[in-house]
Image (cartoon, rainbow, N blue to C red; front, top):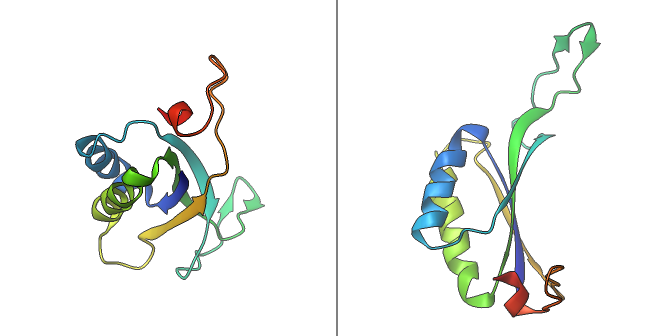
Length: 112
């Protein structure tokens, strides 16, 4: 079991979700986040507060069984890639355990 975390551009979310759906990867958590990488965003003043030079990004979190790791990575990279700096990153972490709260199932069965 792996936990895939991806940071992508907000305007690429629909395409990434389409690619995930095509590979039958449906269990995704999506969050709006702020961050910066090599693009080093320009600090802005908004309502008299100086923003810390952070850019709006989308964070995807996906728990998958081992056979879905590569298709998940391929879907994210295909949907998010524009070829420009700031396309994002994909992180793959080992997932020690999962518990489905409703049934008490654990491990790969609990992922779905």
